[in-house]
Length: 622
Image (cartoon, rainbow, N blue to C red):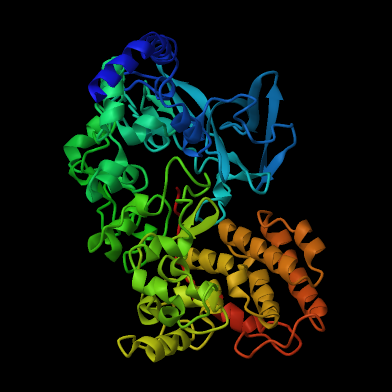
């Protein structure tokens, strides 16, 4: 009976389906093959071809940030204010403006003069948007990143030198990355750099004829090349037979149908910095692109970068090591795969990316499974803990101390001027973290407490397998609150993490600590790393919003990205304002914060902490 129904339905639907396939599936493929930067090699057909049959999935994909990762410039795609106002940084300036339908920037030229650059590509859409100009290089084009970007949340321009984890740098072109040899690999679908010159000629002479199947992260990034599937589904009998039979879909990959290794591989192809598995494949990467396709085991094609990955050539020998905490935990975004592969939930369990994330459902900002709360993502595999969370955590149920992710996926990863959650699901360990000079999950919330205090509590609750640290790798006094010691004595990554943590609502259990938090954050607004200053000022604003004492106007006037002289004035103005305004509004501050009864910092002690930073310079791009 079912077979007769299938044939009848197919016969009735055939004219409609053939029309759809022709108007929405076939012609766009041919048209796109002629579009600049787009190819139809290797069985790729492009997202528009998928729309004909998958209207709902196409619509849910279009609202994600993946869909808008790389775009051509027009009124709908450009989010920056190209309004003609100057953007100053160090001793120079840029001016983004419109010229009719063109989006342009007046920027410093190599000869010391000025030049006009036209935006040809926009990359990013969630936290900030970067802009690339097309430059002719011989008989080819390359796309080079322009020196300022638009920060979406704060609606302002920032120089590239201020958003990465590096110190102030007056070189306006320090981050002038080439899209064809860098961004193309993870911000597009089926990238083919198509290098046309020898790699031995060096990057400055590299010529490309780069092509992608789709600008941005589209359907075939996760489901594989769609030509075979599209061809099979043009037959209405096959289409309806597939619909009624269910099971794996002909000619296409569906990540939920894959085993654990291959499922994680789909996301890991971009969310895991990597190198070709063999050096012989490196040349292919820069010509025909990565060899991995959804459904493969990614590790058969690439080797994920680790802290001990050798660095070839003249690059910084610590290039990769700086992207990890000393215990091997990733501390930079785009290393989520490395975190997952090291997690006991993956190594000894069934966890995949889809355990928590849903690509076509949920808030586009995180694409988390909407049917699960944050704790349910963990208790789906740990039901005994979920039955009585407070008994496991020794914290009040429903509070941050009983949040699975706050303890086991703490925010210790820097990227795009933000601190993100670690994907190395692990148990907090104060002694380990003191030795590894990395943030501790407990003191990211208990910012008024030391690492020995955290260790003693863990021993009290879970036994003496937790050691009490007696020294810190950064040489700061072990009895200081960890957040304060780390904010001043840690390396730039540690400082950035705690600059953000001190402003979160989880870090202020009562108003009495906020005077000390504000004072130390005010000092961090003078840090030598722009990203640390940015996060410190944001935390000050957050504290002021929750417990206002009258700092709002001052903080609005401060620009954390300004030069050293105005930054220094802002630090002392903010410290004086805190000492003047906090009494009567905040309770007395507990001891141990290097803050006197008059709410003035012991600046000599703070300077001794900052001296511990030494010459530990970090410069990490993204």
